[in-house]
Length: 382
Image (tube, rainbow, N blue to C red; front, side, top):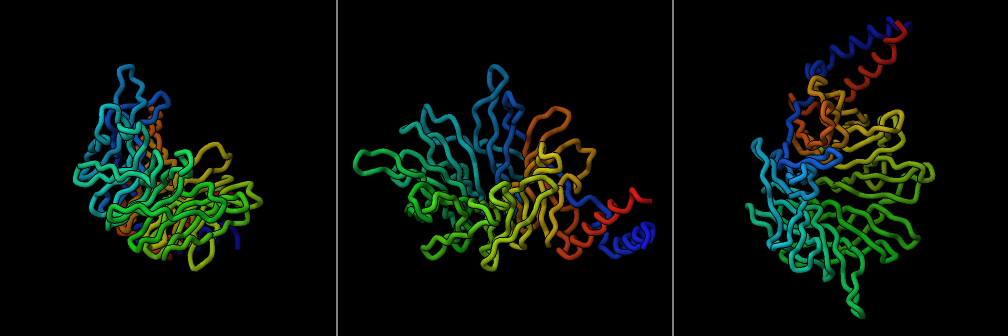
């Protein structure tokens, strides 16, 4: 078949795809900032969203010299950003939000005035509460489910001299901390995400000196393995217990995004560069994250659906003048919270992407991606 025949066949395929394929797939909403910008041009980092499209993260506070160094946790809802403040105390000046649940409760970390160390917090209805630690000096809340149970990392205290040990992953529920341990070696672990069934994913040291992604359920840590290398890291989990993150492959020469399901880890590939990381997963198994593109100098945000990884920058209006560098979370509606740069100024901001039409069926989405790929392949030959 010659190139013109291939192109004709592709056009026929594309005509069979629903109308969404002819349009940009996402609108983009800027999360905004609390007014500060660092010397490197960072203003806001969006870290998570819930199924209502509420977003949390951290945003920098204005500084007298114009270059901010202090950041606060925020809640973005109804097109407005709100400063969540910090834990009480004269010297409690910094905080960050890392996860948000369906009720708009946020967990993260904030400087604790008494110990001058980071403590995990729960912010509910605008009130930030210190949830404490596993006994050590500091902790960080990284994941929260709809019942308000939290996972993250915390130091413990060595009995003989009171020195910090860890940090270790924890499960916090009903005011009680549980140290969920490690996969071996007792060096460290931390929890990255928790679903409504109480399943937790994260990363832990192993007895052989490696680091592995884990799945915690029913009081047990399970090693999720790797893609052939020595290291892996679990970053997000959905309601079905499917996990995404990054794992070493090819002798640890690169980290690739993975999907762990049905007892096996699948390599999601990259956008053409050397490495990638899965950062968010929804209940349909769609994944968002970040990948190097060809040349390995720049990273772009991606969506992975039905076996295909697509650059999110190809699915938004180029006239917006932004470059999305990482997708941090994706909800049941297909909304994505992402970070990127405003090309004209270089300022790095958080963004909320919303499908312009209902989330396409995975098979149709894949067909669209295949068709576009075929057009790009044959067009130079015409």
